[in-house]
Image 1: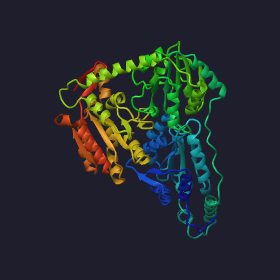
Image 2: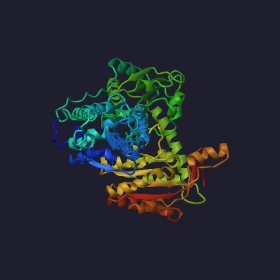
Image 3: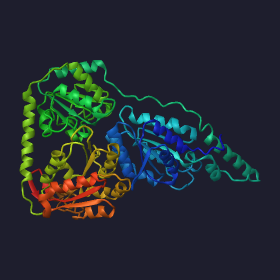
Image 4: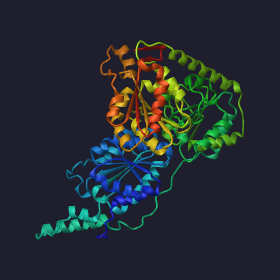
Length: 586
């Protein structure tokens, strides 16, 4: 044991993070984790503190999705960790590799009623691929290396490493807290003193010796035989269709290579999750509307990184006569509901992007008749025509949300990243606003979590400082993110928030009122969110009936404010839209 060293476990944490290329550490400060925050700052890792721990995890999630690396967040013990649970579960379902570092009470005081000491491991085991608690300083590096590999291997997901306070602070500080300054005189006192000295020695023994490297990444790959069988199925198709999901954008396949492969394949496709924007805006192979009808007509369907959960009606949207190829890193998820509503012709466990490249290579430039893609495009055009008609419908007060979002689509720059957080307004935006390229769309994923907006925007702008980050919020969802405009101001993160403010939880109200006859708990107010943001130091703008002819000008003004380095909130007062019958009501 090096008893005179001022080094501490926080430095070991920072060293591993830097070695893995980590550029940002998101946190909400607490005494349990101070050493690792200070050490990261000294090594050039940017430490970004938020106003709620859940935002820190969402920001790390966004970094993971946009960079293909592990997003890292550190929070303090007890309530600091419990505040992250929703975001960690969201990362698990979205399959985002996030490393959660959690403080904890001293190893010596576990289960003795210490401040903020709870069974954190039991809390996170159901949520994380890998959980470990470090009990010796020398174990910090190998544990973190194993965690980083686990987060990215197989099906990516969150991992949790618990770091008790006595493995993070220097020897002399832990000694002062743990061992009496003078040995007691009594037999029992000397025995306890001896025990504490040995406990401390074991805690720090070999703390600064070199440690072995971590395990390699384990990414499943489709076998050549599986790929060949899929090539043969697809080669005989007359009406093939591809549905591409988030897994397709995971490393090691770059988005540019995947896009080129899809264009070479020449099969019409639907893009979901992180695959949105893969083909850019208005690509002839990208079909955006009427997915259910298209799936029923297709004779071969490739589900690439997509599973048959509620988003595909549990598989019922697939035709019994279609041949289904499904490829996914996770075998259990890949086969969900296949015992009831659908059957795969080929189920391939492997990396989706790599599989698509091999599939295209195997098909060797085969083409399909253009009338199938043209039929799907015509259905798209019909749906878009109906949206144009709805955009022209008058509203009794406030603004038509369809028209507003059409103008957002027209104004959105090519270097933008879209972050969406909400229900009704965001659901409309998903039909009307197109991401301009791959990895330019961030939504919560299958968990449907509200409150991701500020964290996702924070992570996105840090990853891509030259991009314009446009956040589309419902007014209900924005309530979770408002305080983080303080974070944006303090850290000089210029993002742009557009709030579709219809004074209610409209997505819920639309179902609740007709079926149960009450709007209880669904009503909000036309709150001055732009003024609240100004109170936090951001810029605030209002769009309402009074300046409805200046929507584009206000959006341009907000863009300029962001370019000048200011976060901006645009509060847009809108009427309520019901796409089921085409009506727009207030």
